[in-house]
Length: 140
Image (cartoon, rainbow, N blue to C red):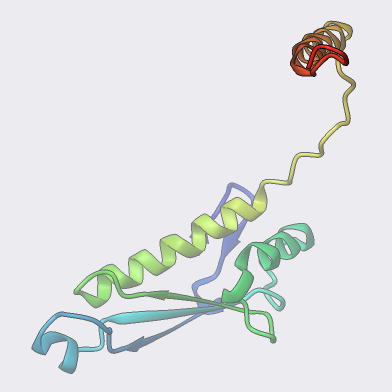
């Protein structure tokens, strides 16, 4: 079991890992060793996630979520398969922990009386400056 929070834990059987060859520099190691990890987690059919977390996770996943609701995380930063595997798992755990936190609701507020007065005073000063720039009729 992979512990996300004190209430949420994911069974390792829900995760599907596949290893592929990494791209980029690395010499012969890149051409012969499959070190990159592709971690798949079925968000929509997971019994471990509550409904609210599932919906927020789908929004947070963005392009990493397939049409079937499978979250795909790819990791190829390290040279070893084990470190890439741990990195992909950490990315998944942090994404789910972010989805656990419900969004804060913005409460509409009104400007204070002091801020309204300051705004009007600034507008009046600006108006005075601009009126002084205008040419007076008959002085040209």
